[in-house]
Image (tube, rainbow, N blue to C red; front, side, top):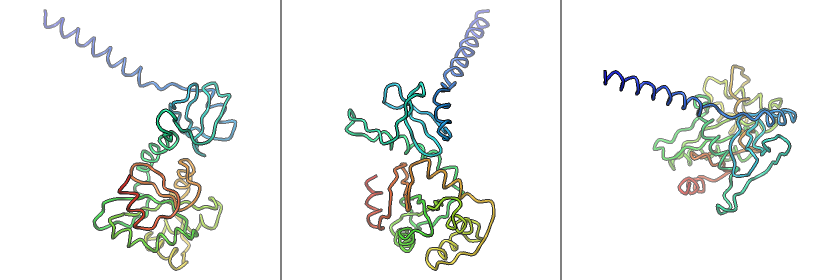
Length: 240
């Protein structure tokens, strides 16, 4: 009898615990923010807490904004935390997003792998970009330093540009890495079409603060804008 009562008591506790966990798992919604942002033609991807009273960080398809909980005020820019030594709160938010979202593109990147890999960088690139071509000319130097280079597409002219169509051809080639070599080193692009990730790459870049190429994402989510020579890139990676 005693054991039966104990069993029933433990079962009751388990049920309460499960119910409590479910309650905590329910995310708070902000309909006022959703409505206000939608009126601007933006799509809300996520809403996160920020150290700014009465405001939320709103990640959209066009980047990060700060919106009041009642949906009446909007800020766009970089948020610094003075109490934490000018910590860049905007970059802290976006770094987490970059890390979490990069994984879904794992099979859609064009990779130049280092034999003795120590680091990996993810580079938003455009085949018409001069500094992107310069970076690509030095792929072997990056690799020799133990740096694997992975490319995501970011046609600077948008998804209606010739650059976009050419990058689709590169990603649709039988050997995308060789097609990238031909496009950047020889200016040769063989027209191809297929189901491809170029639009998704471009939208992802716009979401996380990419505005030009090359733009480099480090393994900790840090965004490094612009070209960095191999040795400089190694120093950045060693210090990250």
